[in-house]
Length: 286
Image 1: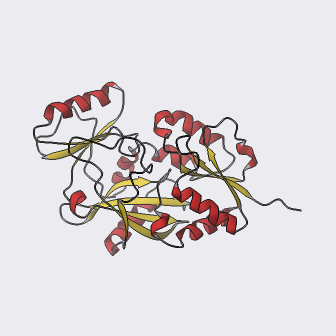
Image 2: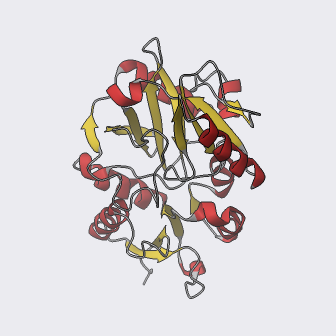
Protein backbone atom coordinates (compact mmCIF):
# COMPACT_ATOMS: atom_id res chain seq x y z
CA UNK A 1 0.00 0.00 0.00
CA UNK A 2 1.43 3.35 -1.05
CA UNK A 3 1.49 6.02 1.66
CA UNK A 4 -0.41 9.19 0.96
CA UNK A 5 1.75 12.21 0.14
CA UNK A 6 2.32 14.53 3.05
CA UNK A 7 3.31 18.17 3.08
CA UNK A 8 4.05 20.80 5.70
CA UNK A 9 2.89 24.38 5.66
CA UNK A 10 5.60 26.33 7.46
CA UNK A 11 4.63 29.07 9.91
CA UNK A 12 6.27 30.87 12.86
CA UNK A 13 5.96 30.42 16.62
CA UNK A 14 4.03 33.67 16.94
CA UNK A 15 1.32 32.13 14.77
CA UNK A 16 1.56 28.40 15.51
CA UNK A 17 -1.82 27.59 13.98
CA UNK A 18 -0.85 29.33 10.76
CA UNK A 19 -2.35 32.23 8.86
CA UNK A 20 -5.86 32.24 7.41
CA UNK A 21 -4.30 31.31 4.07
CA UNK A 22 -2.46 28.34 5.57
CA UNK A 23 -5.54 26.98 7.30
CA UNK A 24 -7.63 27.35 4.14
CA UNK A 25 -4.93 25.60 2.12
CA UNK A 26 -4.64 22.76 4.65
CA UNK A 27 -8.41 22.17 4.52
CA UNK A 28 -8.45 22.24 0.72
CA UNK A 29 -5.54 19.78 0.57
CA UNK A 30 -7.33 17.44 2.95
CA UNK A 31 -10.26 17.47 0.56
CA UNK A 32 -7.90 16.23 -2.14
CA UNK A 33 -6.55 13.45 0.05
CA UNK A 34 -3.28 15.20 0.87
CA UNK A 35 -2.23 15.36 4.51
CA UNK A 36 -0.94 18.82 5.41
CA UNK A 37 0.52 19.77 8.77
CA UNK A 38 1.00 23.37 9.85
CA UNK A 39 4.42 23.41 11.53
CA UNK A 40 6.68 26.09 13.02
CA UNK A 41 9.80 26.43 10.88
CA UNK A 42 12.30 26.60 13.76
CA UNK A 43 10.65 24.03 16.04
CA UNK A 44 13.42 21.48 16.81
CA UNK A 45 10.79 18.79 17.46
CA UNK A 46 9.62 18.76 13.82
CA UNK A 47 11.06 16.01 11.62
CA UNK A 48 11.06 17.75 8.26
CA UNK A 49 12.38 14.66 6.47
CA UNK A 50 8.98 13.00 6.78
CA UNK A 51 7.42 15.50 4.40
CA UNK A 52 7.40 15.16 0.64
CA UNK A 53 7.13 18.92 0.32
CA UNK A 54 7.38 21.97 2.57
CA UNK A 55 5.40 25.03 1.47
CA UNK A 56 6.51 28.31 3.04
CA UNK A 57 3.47 30.21 4.26
CA UNK A 58 3.47 32.38 7.39
CA UNK A 59 7.12 32.42 8.49
CA UNK A 60 6.72 36.09 9.34
CA UNK A 61 9.56 36.26 11.86
CA UNK A 62 12.34 35.28 9.44
CA UNK A 63 13.70 38.83 9.28
CA UNK A 64 14.94 38.48 12.86
CA UNK A 65 17.16 35.52 11.86
CA UNK A 66 17.37 35.52 8.10
CA UNK A 67 20.57 33.47 7.95
CA UNK A 68 19.08 30.74 10.15
CA UNK A 69 15.88 30.74 8.11
CA UNK A 70 17.77 30.34 4.84
CA UNK A 71 19.97 27.60 6.28
CA UNK A 72 16.82 25.76 7.36
CA UNK A 73 15.30 26.15 3.88
CA UNK A 74 18.53 24.84 2.33
CA UNK A 75 18.35 21.75 4.55
CA UNK A 76 14.88 20.69 3.38
CA UNK A 77 14.53 17.85 0.87
CA UNK A 78 12.00 19.90 -1.12
CA UNK A 79 10.71 23.38 -0.42
CA UNK A 80 8.58 25.84 -2.39
CA UNK A 81 9.17 28.41 -3.33
CA UNK A 82 12.73 27.06 -3.84
CA UNK A 83 15.48 27.94 -1.38
CA UNK A 84 17.49 29.91 -3.94
CA UNK A 85 14.41 32.02 -4.71
CA UNK A 86 13.91 32.62 -0.98
CA UNK A 87 17.51 33.76 -0.63
CA UNK A 88 17.11 36.22 -3.52
CA UNK A 89 13.69 37.49 -2.44
CA UNK A 90 14.24 37.98 1.30
CA UNK A 91 16.44 41.03 0.73
CA UNK A 92 14.79 43.83 -1.23
CA UNK A 93 18.02 44.52 -3.09
CA UNK A 94 16.37 42.16 -5.60
CA UNK A 95 14.66 45.33 -6.84
CA UNK A 96 18.01 46.35 -8.34
CA UNK A 97 18.02 43.17 -10.43
CA UNK A 98 14.49 43.77 -11.62
CA UNK A 99 15.17 47.41 -12.44
CA UNK A 100 18.26 46.34 -14.42
CA UNK A 101 16.00 43.94 -16.33
CA UNK A 102 13.78 46.86 -17.39
CA UNK A 103 11.05 46.59 -14.75
CA UNK A 104 9.74 50.02 -13.65
CA UNK A 105 10.06 50.19 -9.87
CA UNK A 106 9.26 52.87 -7.32
CA UNK A 107 12.32 55.19 -7.44
CA UNK A 108 14.77 53.95 -4.83
CA UNK A 109 18.00 55.38 -3.45
CA UNK A 110 20.18 52.86 -1.68
CA UNK A 111 22.14 53.63 1.48
CA UNK A 112 21.50 57.39 1.25
CA UNK A 113 23.72 59.78 3.14
CA UNK A 114 20.91 62.11 4.12
CA UNK A 115 17.29 63.03 3.61
CA UNK A 116 16.03 64.35 0.25
CA UNK A 117 15.33 67.97 -0.56
CA UNK A 118 13.41 67.04 -3.72
CA UNK A 119 10.77 64.75 -2.19
CA UNK A 120 8.14 66.44 0.02
CA UNK A 121 7.37 63.09 1.64
CA UNK A 122 9.49 59.97 1.62
CA UNK A 123 9.84 56.53 3.16
CA UNK A 124 12.89 55.07 4.89
CA UNK A 125 13.11 51.32 5.38
CA UNK A 126 15.63 48.51 5.65
CA UNK A 127 16.03 46.11 2.75
CA UNK A 128 15.39 43.11 5.00
CA UNK A 129 12.04 43.62 6.66
CA UNK A 130 8.46 42.41 6.61
CA UNK A 131 5.20 43.90 7.73
CA UNK A 132 6.57 47.47 7.47
CA UNK A 133 8.69 46.97 10.56
CA UNK A 134 11.37 49.65 10.99
CA UNK A 135 9.71 51.52 8.12
CA UNK A 136 8.52 55.10 8.44
CA UNK A 137 7.04 57.88 6.35
CA UNK A 138 8.55 61.33 6.81
CA UNK A 139 7.75 64.82 5.59
CA UNK A 140 8.29 68.51 6.16
CA UNK A 141 9.15 69.41 9.76
CA UNK A 142 10.26 65.86 10.56
CA UNK A 143 13.83 66.14 9.32
CA UNK A 144 15.49 65.53 12.68
CA UNK A 145 13.43 62.40 13.35
CA UNK A 146 14.09 61.16 9.82
CA UNK A 147 17.84 61.65 10.25
CA UNK A 148 17.71 59.74 13.53
CA UNK A 149 15.80 56.90 11.84
CA UNK A 150 18.35 56.78 9.02
CA UNK A 151 21.24 56.81 11.49
CA UNK A 152 19.73 53.97 13.54
CA UNK A 153 19.34 51.77 10.46
CA UNK A 154 22.84 52.51 9.21
CA UNK A 155 24.40 51.99 12.65
CA UNK A 156 22.74 48.57 12.77
CA UNK A 157 24.53 47.67 9.54
CA UNK A 158 21.33 47.43 7.52
CA UNK A 159 20.95 48.35 3.88
CA UNK A 160 18.68 51.41 3.77
CA UNK A 161 16.13 52.22 1.09
CA UNK A 162 14.76 55.71 0.56
CA UNK A 163 11.72 56.10 -1.67
CA UNK A 164 9.31 58.93 -2.42
CA UNK A 165 5.93 58.61 -0.76
CA UNK A 166 3.54 58.42 -3.70
CA UNK A 167 0.17 60.14 -3.38
CA UNK A 168 -1.50 57.16 -5.04
CA UNK A 169 -0.97 55.19 -1.83
CA UNK A 170 -3.64 57.37 -0.20
CA UNK A 171 -5.99 57.51 -3.18
CA UNK A 172 -5.76 54.36 -5.27
CA UNK A 173 -3.85 52.15 -2.83
CA UNK A 174 -1.63 49.24 -3.84
CA UNK A 175 -2.84 46.46 -6.11
CA UNK A 176 -1.60 43.00 -5.16
CA UNK A 177 -1.75 40.50 -8.02
CA UNK A 178 -1.68 36.88 -6.88
CA UNK A 179 -0.29 34.10 -9.05
CA UNK A 180 -0.69 30.41 -8.25
CA UNK A 181 1.18 27.73 -10.18
CA UNK A 182 2.46 30.34 -12.59
CA UNK A 183 -1.05 31.53 -13.51
CA UNK A 184 -2.79 34.75 -12.52
CA UNK A 185 -5.44 33.99 -9.90
CA UNK A 186 -6.88 37.18 -8.36
CA UNK A 187 -6.07 40.64 -7.03
CA UNK A 188 -6.54 42.59 -3.84
CA UNK A 189 -6.55 46.32 -3.16
CA UNK A 190 -4.41 47.28 -0.17
CA UNK A 191 -5.16 50.52 1.66
CA UNK A 192 -2.53 52.78 3.21
CA UNK A 193 -0.58 51.27 6.10
CA UNK A 194 1.91 54.05 6.91
CA UNK A 195 0.90 57.12 8.85
CA UNK A 196 3.11 60.22 8.73
CA UNK A 197 6.15 59.69 10.91
CA UNK A 198 5.21 56.12 11.75
CA UNK A 199 5.32 52.54 10.55
CA UNK A 200 3.51 49.38 11.50
CA UNK A 201 4.34 47.65 14.75
CA UNK A 202 4.35 43.86 14.91
CA UNK A 203 4.02 41.37 12.09
CA UNK A 204 1.95 41.85 8.96
CA UNK A 205 -1.00 39.50 8.93
CA UNK A 206 -1.46 39.37 12.71
CA UNK A 207 -4.58 41.49 12.58
CA UNK A 208 -3.27 44.45 10.58
CA UNK A 209 -3.94 43.23 7.05
CA UNK A 210 -7.42 41.93 7.64
CA UNK A 211 -10.00 44.61 6.89
CA UNK A 212 -7.53 46.69 4.89
CA UNK A 213 -7.68 44.52 1.78
CA UNK A 214 -10.57 44.33 -0.65
CA UNK A 215 -11.05 42.29 -3.79
CA UNK A 216 -10.35 44.15 -7.01
CA UNK A 217 -9.84 43.53 -10.71
CA UNK A 218 -6.38 43.98 -12.18
CA UNK A 219 -6.10 46.23 -15.20
CA UNK A 220 -4.46 45.15 -18.43
CA UNK A 221 -1.46 47.37 -17.68
CA UNK A 222 -1.09 45.84 -14.21
CA UNK A 223 -1.27 42.31 -15.60
CA UNK A 224 1.28 43.10 -18.30
CA UNK A 225 3.72 44.50 -15.75
CA UNK A 226 3.19 41.59 -13.35
CA UNK A 227 4.05 39.11 -16.10
CA UNK A 228 7.18 41.12 -16.92
CA UNK A 229 8.21 41.08 -13.28
CA UNK A 230 7.84 37.31 -12.96
CA UNK A 231 9.65 36.72 -16.24
CA UNK A 232 12.64 38.61 -14.80
CA UNK A 233 12.98 36.41 -11.70
CA UNK A 234 16.35 34.61 -11.85
CA UNK A 235 16.00 31.03 -12.98
CA UNK A 236 13.14 31.70 -15.36
CA UNK A 237 10.90 28.98 -13.95
CA UNK A 238 7.33 28.94 -12.73
CA UNK A 239 6.78 29.53 -9.04
CA UNK A 240 4.24 27.86 -6.79
CA UNK A 241 2.98 31.26 -5.67
CA UNK A 242 3.79 34.91 -6.14
CA UNK A 243 2.32 38.24 -5.16
CA UNK A 244 3.20 41.27 -7.26
CA UNK A 245 2.49 44.58 -5.49
CA UNK A 246 1.98 47.55 -7.81
CA UNK A 247 1.13 51.21 -7.35
CA UNK A 248 0.31 53.95 -9.86
CA UNK A 249 3.23 56.28 -10.51
CA UNK A 250 2.89 60.04 -11.03
CA UNK A 251 1.85 59.47 -14.66
CA UNK A 252 -0.66 56.77 -13.73
CA UNK A 253 1.38 53.88 -15.09
CA UNK A 254 1.93 51.04 -12.61
CA UNK A 255 5.23 50.71 -10.76
CA UNK A 256 6.51 47.70 -8.84
CA UNK A 257 6.73 48.37 -5.14
CA UNK A 258 7.45 44.79 -4.02
CA UNK A 259 7.59 41.22 -5.28
CA UNK A 260 6.59 38.69 -2.62
CA UNK A 261 7.86 35.15 -3.25
CA UNK A 262 8.62 34.02 0.30
CA UNK A 263 5.72 34.22 2.75
CA UNK A 264 3.09 36.60 1.39
CA UNK A 265 -0.53 36.75 2.41
CA UNK A 266 -2.34 35.64 -0.73
CA UNK A 267 -5.79 36.95 0.28
CA UNK A 268 -7.46 33.64 -0.51
CA UNK A 269 -10.50 34.70 1.49
CA UNK A 270 -11.17 37.44 -1.07
CA UNK A 271 -11.27 35.02 -4.02
CA UNK A 272 -13.65 32.08 -3.49
CA UNK A 273 -12.20 28.90 -4.92
CA UNK A 274 -8.62 30.17 -4.96
CA UNK A 275 -7.71 27.89 -2.05
CA UNK A 276 -8.80 24.91 -4.16
CA UNK A 277 -6.66 26.08 -7.07
CA UNK A 278 -3.74 26.47 -4.68
CA UNK A 279 -4.32 22.99 -3.25
CA UNK A 280 -4.49 21.46 -6.72
CA UNK A 281 -1.20 23.13 -7.64
CA UNK A 282 0.44 21.66 -4.52
CA UNK A 283 -1.14 18.23 -5.07
CA UNK A 284 0.02 18.22 -8.66
CA UNK A 285 3.61 18.78 -7.56
CA UNK A 286 3.31 15.90 -5.08
